[in-house]
Length: 377
Ligand SMILES: [Zn+2]
Image (tube, rainbow, N blue to C red; front, side, top):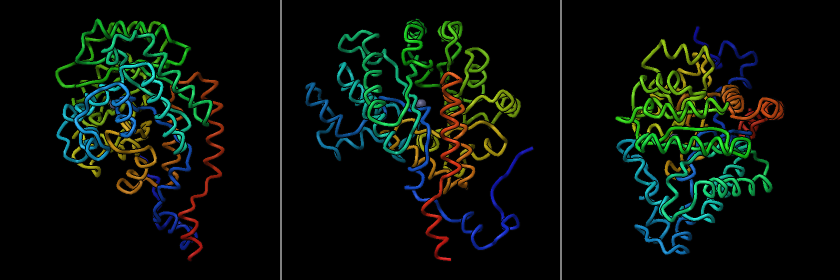
């Protein structure tokens, strides 16, 4: 049975106050104050634009523009983006300045810092080390650099982090196997999972199933981008051939009710990235985003940024979007937040402790924006 926990007038006992709670908008500041996760964010899509300019100058790399405003159209896609392939063009610019150890330490630190400043308490950063070897860095160094940047942020802020390494759909399956080996080598050292990213159409996941086999046999978690630029068959392959524990995006799960029920029954989390999905045209417009339906059906949904810079967003902004455009109220947002923490690739004991802390905070949370409205009554 679909559930619908949105407050309707008949449910509101004390009409005045409760109705204001049901209808008043949460401010972005309130959403920033809530503890949150970001389980799906790409390092190479989440830089600060001034940092790209500074790194280019330091490394003598030529960029398509030499000012923040000049570079913006090359690294933020906006509404003109036509497809996932179009969206991925911004990464040519970012990757050009992410080929040194120090640049990886810095960009990883800054991503975790930006996340911590909007109260993201648990962050899983993903990237594909194979894309950072243009200057000959070793794969081990590429992983160590990102872990170092994240640890620096953990020492400074109240944030826990993990790394997900990505195989690439359009790159040879042999490379995915090397990246799977790298994931195994860094198990319990900061790498918490393995992913498959990149252009989805014409590049099926099943070609990479040996890499996923290796990761799974070493008892490591995996997630796959699927059902974003291709249909539910892609999600089917991700789960049944590659053993996905979570699905990146999964918007097209809506096209296959039987598979949707399986995903629901097995509590397979969906890493939803609403704004990114509109930009890549995985959904036509926000009002069509299936996260509302998935949530109402009881699926485990999480809210994520995908790429903080390329999509020009934050986790708080993504919650604002589902609040304002898809009608998620505060209680529902709190529940989605809890599902985010439940879906973390963390050892169970750590996850339980973090979850207990967050549940306690969410219970005590009072939105300032709604309080000021209540005082006006
Ligand atoms: Zn992604």
